[in-house]
Length: 567
Ligand code: GLC
Ligand code: CA
Image 1 (cartoon, rainbow, N blue to C red):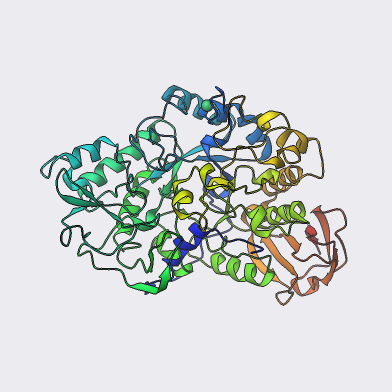
Image 2: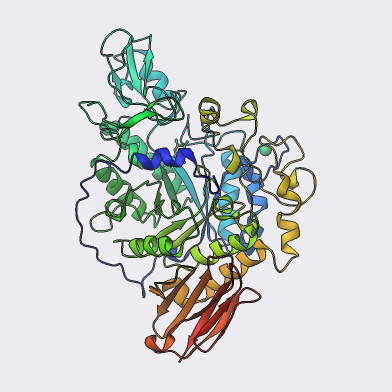
């Protein structure tokens, strides 16, 4: 396949195309002009800590490593970093199995290292966001160890325990999104516990008020330590049908793990999640903090539900439908941008993360990958909304999955091989320079460094004004200094053009035009500026052979023209 879609992403989205009778909401557009919160003007950057920078050369990235790269991030134009889980964890799901929410895993450092990181970040005006794994803990968390110890233990009801239907039969047909039954039998108490993800990640019972209190307190604990918000992991899966009804089967056949295709009707997106989100938001508001959501929504009506009826839930629910536009199609991007622009809250744009194939590979054609990487940067960094970058995207890092099953680290890649190769490919070490191991570590990196580090690395790209990195810096600088890009409303123009995506961003009397050639041939177009009251466009940032004259714009293949409109 030319643009491989990650099968984990498909799995996650499939369950979204499901049972919602999306309650209609009045879509009151949040103001674009004034009164923005800090997170609306900020550019976020996701760091996968294992892979960013290794300070003690054990092959695994760490907090001191991140601190040592803050100047780089500041210079790049990053205002907030979201660090994927760095809490104590057996690392079955590489940190998404937390065994203590109020500490740092020794492999990443100490709480003192964390305090150092936040204080150094603060000096540079960078906010620190943590990843809050709300749906489940590790099976090694004290809460679960106590829970499984006896049917009458203090924490028994903190997780979801049920009798089987009969000998060797789980309570219902639910399958784990990571393969196999979502129920694991525990012989100590002769009951099954529920796990939406790996068996080592038992789901918390959010119907128990004690769970809610303990988890809310975790956020308070980190806010007091200077954390500016959380990315909430897997919020869709917080609640389950109390009657445990069987999920319907969507279609015949088996998925990569050999399980039936289930519609996750009774174990995802239950309405009860919204009460929890409103509560978490109240606590966040007391600390001027932001809540980002890992929200796999099927449409904007669902996305609106995550903003909350009066914008009192998540400030930044991620729009993954944008990542599902899997070809460079102006029509499809136009449609998706318009939908999100009309959502009831402030848009959030993401093109890559630690669970999906990097945008570099999803959109790259193998010949113009760097130009296309710049094009994608010019797109999602000039839209109305908050962008969340993913480490390495700014240098054109390539997804590099393992080629042999025995090299796979991500468990789903081992169980799902060869259909599902896991997520190692998008988690490879950051490429800092062209020395051994790309300057990530002097030890043996936990995942191999892709061969592209020789051509795509921070040091070399910093010296090359035509690099992907140089372009990212320019567009981020423009975004930070241009009021129309920061706050302006969004208006699509030339909507019938099949090759070029164009739009205006207007704030007060300032208008910027963004023109993106999504084709491999040169394009010439008339912007019809007079209709919008303008005569011409002055380039603010364009690729070498893309220019404007009066109303006319000429673009090289995958060319970019960003200009200020003049009356
Ligand atoms: C989210 C994370 C993913 C993790 C899963 C279970 O989807 O992004 O990496 O495996 O939750 O915690
Ligand atoms: Ca290390």
